[in-house]
Image (cartoon, rainbow, N blue to C red; front, side, top):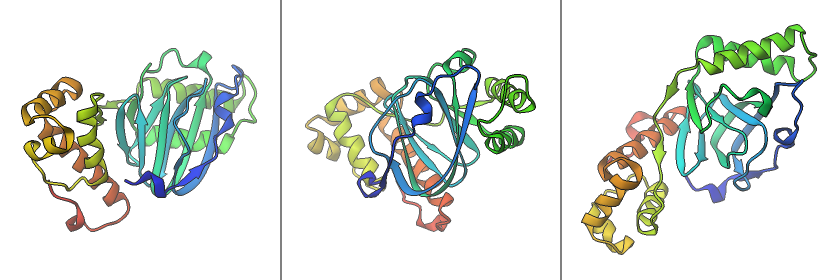
Length: 236
């Protein structure tokens, strides 16, 4: 995905608003072919859920493609970027840090159950105009409790840090269907195929083939969410 062609979104200031009497501040948005102007972090944790469309989230050197069946949790003060390659109906829930103690301390993708989806929708309807011990307050507490027990999914694309490895990864991110083998990639990276093979396993926990397969799977998820025919999915 070429992020340079995406519309740059203005920063959302809600994430910097600290108020323990508002455990959750919801924000609904509709965006299309847009993304963050730059990586950023804020004191509130953030649950990002697209009820329609697919997001690409970059968090702590990992890349996640998030379809409507999932949501991404970004803990407080975690630097992240979010991109929306198509039309997305977005539901953000900004959680005050005083209420995040039972939630993961790292970026996590949750499966969104039908109950959690309804809770997110209800939270957006309530907005931030609720008081302590009101019905809206209790909905937010149930939502936080449901997030605590939501099932996490491990499907993400780990990124390396070695400059030689990153040259290969960044080229494949731009063109997931590139079928060059490690020996051919070594010319671009300035490293032998054996060195690249070792770096993939050491820095991502995946072989080169395993990493590329996961990249193509993420690309397929994005294409399907945009109603592109399955036959258009890129091949390994």
